[in-house]
Amino acid sequence: MSISTPGGEQRRPTVVSTGKKPAAGRPASGAKAGSGKPTAARAGGGKGPRKPIAPVKVSQGRAKGPIILFVVVGLVAAGIIGFGAWAAFQGSKPWEERADAISGIVNYREKDPELVKGSNHQPGPIKYTVSPPVAGPHNQAWQNCMGDVYDAPIANEHAVHSLEHGAIWITYRPDLPADQVSKLAEKVRGNEKMLMSPFEGLDKPISLQAWGYQLKLDNADDSRIDEFVKTLRVNASIEGPTALCNQGITATGTTPRDDGVQMPTQ
Picture 1 (tube, rainbow, N blue to C red):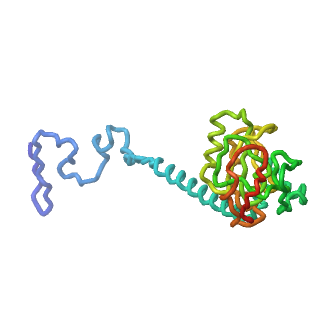
Picture 2: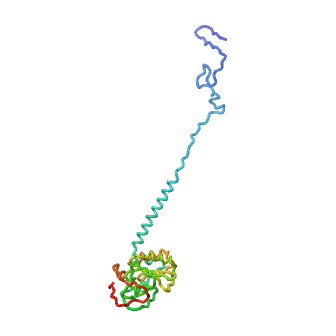
Picture 3: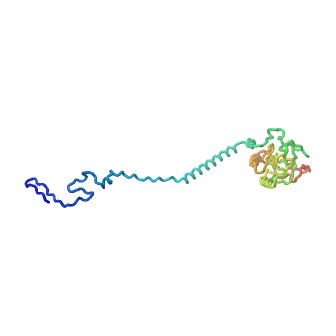
């Protein structure tokens, strides 16, 4: 159908109907873009505009392994440094203080100063007030103390002279188990200023002697044995570090040897 307008300067446009509907989502002919209500496609099915989709955040967990390793290494390093500082501090103390710090040690230098004067040589058997003896009069000959391990008792009079020279004398009850005796022997054998022998009548399985010091123990695994040796060997000498440990008596037996053999003066 056509509509004709009157002639003249104003003429209406001729509208021709095609009988077709405008395509969905597109504005009809003559409609301004963006005008009117939103279509169903733009309105999200009639439910209003869609909300923007928030981006999904992916959390990345930190690797804990390297952190733990770093912390452990740091703690170990701190422990080593701390122990080194403590050991250096301990080592800087006078040996007398370190000796007194050993648990159970008896300091006869304080208990009986007269006993530990030394340089008093006497022939024949000598009666001692401390058993095993730690100081006092002694034979002019010392017991060899170059890491000697004696399998039988030795004379006190010779052993005390060895103590005066800075030796450590380890004694043990004859019934001490063989494995314990072996552990003690390992600490003595081949080490200068050390000697070891069985001793009858001990009130403890093991007894350690240095000049003026004694420590009695129950077994050879006690860590105080090493502390005693480290602290007092040589240091406890009242004749200096050059006092001899060789050229001494090597025989066993509890009777001192006064056979007229001239011994060195130290």
